[in-house]
Image 1: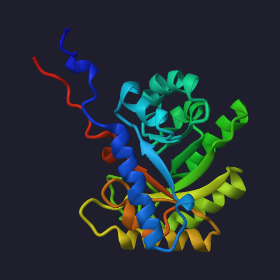
Image 2 (image 1 turned 90 degrees about the horizontal axis):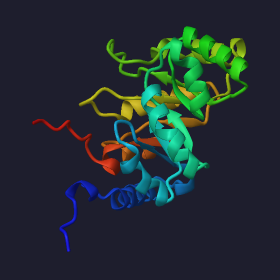
Image 3 (image 1 turned 180 degrees about the vertical axis):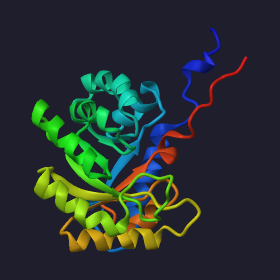
Length: 236
């Protein structure tokens, strides 16, 4: 019998890792007096190919996150042919010229950070007839290199999304600065949500999702802990 082809063997046990993350979410929810059903796991499949994603789908994971429209367009139509009940979140920065593509492909757009983008999405929804649910991304650390509306401008953008552009705005999202305690950033996002009557909070990633759940996250975006590190290109 021939030896198995190493390229055909999974280098990372996605199913076991997914189960571990689900257990950690359940524990964090229980610890904070919450129901595990109130926390949605968004499995962040960016940079991973369909072969790596499929085991998670087969294990029952139904909510996924991607950060690039073009990459998602290459992978997900084929996967959705077999798994039609997937909910796909856009979690990365979005250029206005990609708004229509995003509206056609995604069910949730988490990265609205400026009126111009909100306007482009509203126009794309009018044109396509699709109405993805929307989140405003808040730059809680006020980092100049990072996307997101500044906290002091968040209320105005939220109001514009609702009243001027008629978007189905259901949540807020943040990415705390790397190396900082994320809890104050999660608390800041929660405060903005409360005063605007917003229930959904997308916050927490592989390194801090348990803290996020204790801080009230309704959605946690976990990639590396499920799919492993991004594979580096092979060199010859």
